[in-house]
Image (cartoon, rainbow, N blue to C red; front, side, top):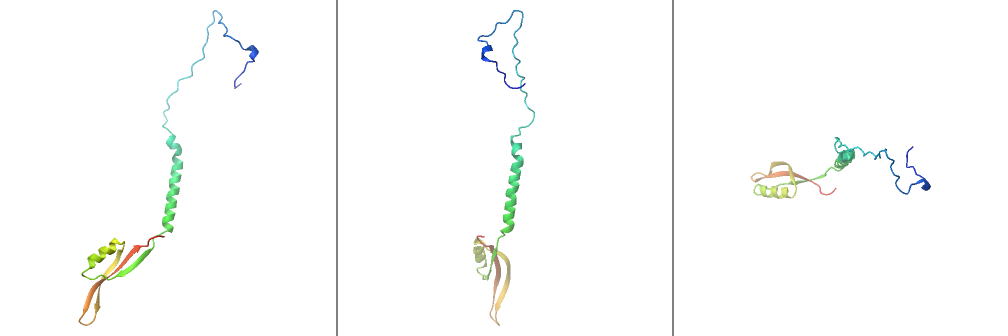
Length: 128
């Protein structure tokens, strides 16, 4: 039978009963010493599956966002002169423009031919 047994109050002794001669008093045995566990601490391992699942969900959301929100590009054509080519290209590069292609172009008539570059530039559009 489990649980706590109670003794009616009329039967409870007021004082400790004397020990009869020739008998030994027995004391309750001490609980066995607690042995150290050889298993590793499972505190972190308990939360590992949840952590991995949350990480996977975050990565999937980021991947879906990246696939659906590809950057849009804007393009520009420019014709810098031979004398200011480096300065103009450095200025456009500082503004975020990237050279897609560049070719040498000539224009003019019979005796007056001018040469310059034609460059196609691109950069990602800002915003969504």
